[in-house]
Length: 228
Image 1 (cartoon, one colour):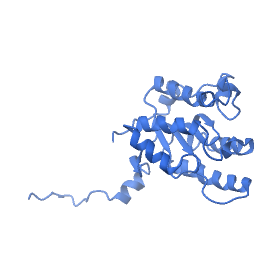
Image 2: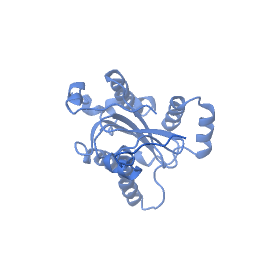
Image 3: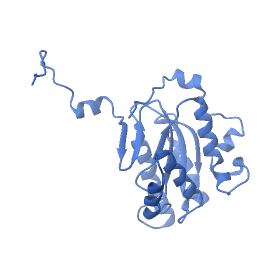
Image 4: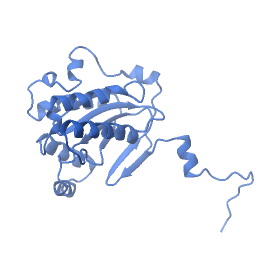
């Protein structure tokens, strides 16, 4: 067997050295869901309450769905049905979630769109260097779990452990993702007009505040994902 030459005496970088240079995980998996974590991507993220999707229902949906896209659609439809305690429909809790999403806008990420539903949250952000997506989502969920438990005077798990994310491929896809997020309350039968839902960025768009344009994103130097 041929021996690898290291004439300069420089060994390959260890995992810890690579992680120190780039904390982002690129393509990775936490259980059964694949995630993409690359700085500069536009990422659509959905996280949900712990009781919003019973494990037996999830297993059934996974069995029925042919791929992750189909699974995502089936889970979204189930979430929109409003299963569980739906704590997020309480205005005080929904407002805390919006405040948390807006708090780090412009520093850890750029917040483009969001919608707080009764048992789940949709968020569209542009990720930033040195702030990996898993850490951003964890910070949201950790802070909000404490705030929600405090508000409800209870303890225990608030959020499902994992989350869904999809990166936005182009401006056409961006428009479709924003439209989907804003239409969620209408699709779930909660309001007739998306701008009437009080806990969504749709009301800002109705006032003429669009998500970041392509030229603005290009000026910040977005990167592209690495294929899994």
